[in-house]
Amino acid sequence: MAFVLQRWKILLVLNIIAVAGFMSFWTKCSSSRPAIPANSHSNVKRQSRYNLTIQRSSISHETLLKRLASLEDVVYRQLNGLSKSLGLIEGFGGRGTGGLPETLSPAEEANAKYLREKYGYNAYLSNKISLDRSIPDFRPSKCKKTTYPRDLPQISLIFIFVNEALSVILRSVHSAVNHTPAHLLKEIILVDDNSDDGQLKAPLEEYMSRRYPGLVKIVRNRKWEGLIRARIEGWKVATGEVTGFFDAHVEFTPSWAEPVLARIKGDRSRIILPSIDNIKHETFALEHYENSGHGYDWQLWCKYINPPKEWWDKGDVAAPIRTPAMIGCSFVAHREYFGELGLLDDGMDVYGGENIELGIRVWLCGGSMEVLPCSRVAHMARMKKPYHSDIAFPRPTQCPACGRSLDG
Image 1 (cartoon, rainbow, N blue to C red):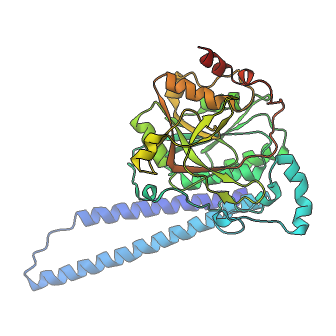
Image 2 (image 1 turned 180 degrees about the vertical axis):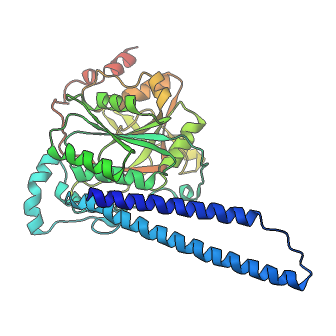
Image 3 (image 1 turned 45 degrees about the vertical axis):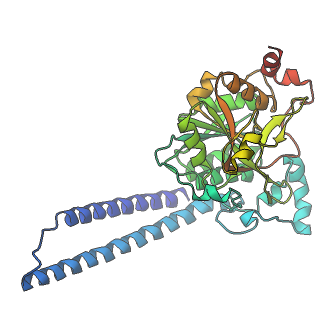
């Protein structure tokens, strides 16, 4: 398998070089075309022969492009075999396409119970859904017409996982690669917070090294650190100008990255939150969530809140929504600015406190936090949390920095 894959990679590279050389030669010949007077009969014949030569060159060019496309398809089929060896599926069709709900047959359901209890969602069904499936585009219509400059900062995507189903992690990565422009995607960093699931060791590493060579880094925590410290470890190895932090059970909407990076390019002190849609944990159906800000109650639990009056007064549903806090399954920050803020409080063991802490931190330090309706990421809430600690202890312990900030 490795030999065949390597052979097709070499053929693909050689054909790309051939196409590039041909196009360079053809462009040079075209640019050096002599000026031909239009009056004489002989010149007309020469012009006709020249046009015929150009036409033949164009045909050859099209043939080479078709050949290259054919080779790319062969290589894709070879890469697709990597997922088949794991019992998974690639491609843009199949079950769950378009974010439609899926159910299991009675025979499948009998096999699904164990995985559902293990992961907190229907992992058996996830294994039957393509890693490349499409999901609905819930962006406002104005967002779909907006264009962005090409020279945006590059982003490092950081996914945190612990004992996650392999198919769910891979779908998060496939979705990120499929819907993030290649010139903007610096790297993907997977931070394993000391998982003990065997599939997340060698099978994950082998798949990533073959499927996305040079793009994906895997960081292994030697002991369980918790979500916050795991995010900090991912930030340490990131090299992109911008860092995006995500749970490893998300899927991306097309053009999610450009509006985020454009806002950060305009002001590096903005913490950007893509709008969140819901992946239902049982059927993997997509559920649209309306535009909202992120706030918290008196117990410091984060929740969705109505956008501020100023946003409604603008009458623009595509406008950024200024928000006091975040729901932390996905947020994006300029890497250096995030460091200047002090990152996150590494005294927090589990999730939740950072949602409020980062909001307080950025607003007090002269920055801002905003939700973007033009950027959407779908997230799945697990019914079972893979943590070793009880998260029901008093809130000030969960968020030390929040207590200090609120106490003055």
